[in-house]
Image 1: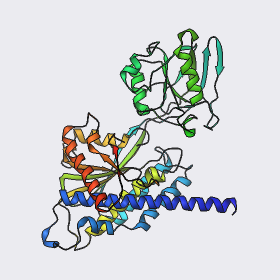
Image 2 (image 1 turned 90 degrees about the horizontal axis):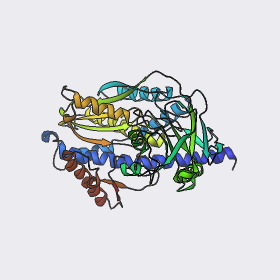
Image 3 (image 1 turned 180 degrees about the horizontal axis):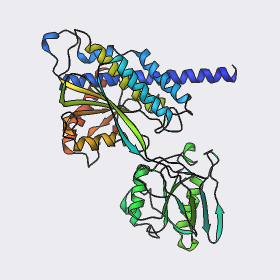
Image 4 (image 1 turned 135 degrees about the vertical axis):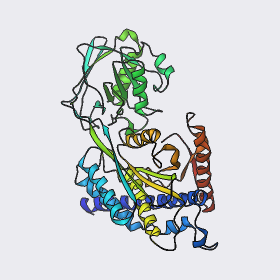
Amino acid sequence: MSEQAEHSSISNRSLKLIIAGIAAGIVITITILGLAIAIFVKINSSSTSDNSPSAGSLLGDSIRIEELMDHLKEFQRIATANNGNRAVSTLGFNQTLDYIRDTLAINTDFVVSNKYFPIRQFGLNSDPILTSSINGVDKTYIYSKNLATADFYHIDFSTAVDFSAFVPLTAIPNVGCSDSDWKNANPPPNGSVAIVKRGICAFPDKGALAAKYNVTALLIYNDGASPDRVSPIAIALGQESFLPALFLSFPVGQELANAALNISNNAGVRLAINVKELPLSPVGNICADTPTGDANQTIIIGSHSDSVPAGPGINDNGSGSAANLGLAVALARLFKTSTYAKYKYRVRFCWWGAEEVGLLGSDDHVKQAKISTVVGERLSDYLVNLNYDMLGSPNYIFGIYDGKTANSDTPVTALPGSNKMTALYRQWFDEQNLPWNYTDFSGR
């Protein structure tokens, strides 16, 4: 087999795996919506009989896999035409939104709204510089866009910095995810450059703690837990971060962290990060509402529309976006028939922007809903939120988020519904004789 033919075969197998995963995700998606309908929505009894198919099964049967394939192929085509990705603030992202809007306009009579919010953009004027001094010996590290050969890489939304002298380095114990980690650092983080290992909590959480303890800059390094966690990686600390920051490889990070643990080493670093001054960029959320149903009581189904800069995002989250779009079109198609009863409650399908840079689209929607006084736009108008993220993962593991493991700061009023959704998933998998595992409801 030629290299080209082999590559084509591998690509086709990969696509089949993704589609198979999406198909499984769609079944689960439609089933859980059907179950939600059975619980929350009263179907007009005059248009159905006791032995007629359920609303959920009809909706599931109406999903057309070839349409999902078309959505995924279009997402891939958009990415291919735009530097291989559909990341926020790129033409690829904007074309993704255009495609979603056009598909809704052609295939549904749903009420479509577009809401925009500003985000920071990020770019570098020049390659960052990182130099260490340990026991008076200076060493300069390699920055490269080829992460396999790089000692370190920039972090998106880092602020600019140019140290004129070496700044003391402090190693944060454990993985820097708790206040105690930062309080126990020696020397104290205040005024120092903190170095912390990847792990446990999200990168923005480490950044928030670093800012809280007044570090001068933050160095995060990979944990070396596996071969793919040795080199530096591309990450973002988030829109709320205003720290100079870099991401280091495991060997470099371990070297600097070990040196910082011994104060007699006089370990310090110099950083130079030259950041472009760029205007804020508007990013869009799209929501499509069923034209009927009580707006005071809304079932919301969300998925994010952007990819990471490193790839086309066909799983993350083309799979969720395609599922959401396929579900919306299928429901609209059923609503146009005379035999499928309208729902008592409104269903809202949303595609969030800028998820990959900090959940910004969904966060903005929640912030606006908290202050809105418009009926149907208030947070209190939502009954349940279904989040469709990466439905096409090709590992075939059926995982159920366990509502009982929700974060301690989860509103008490949200727990019964979350636990009920967990029970519905479990019941359906058991009825289908499918294996499943619990996974922590960590906000993922």
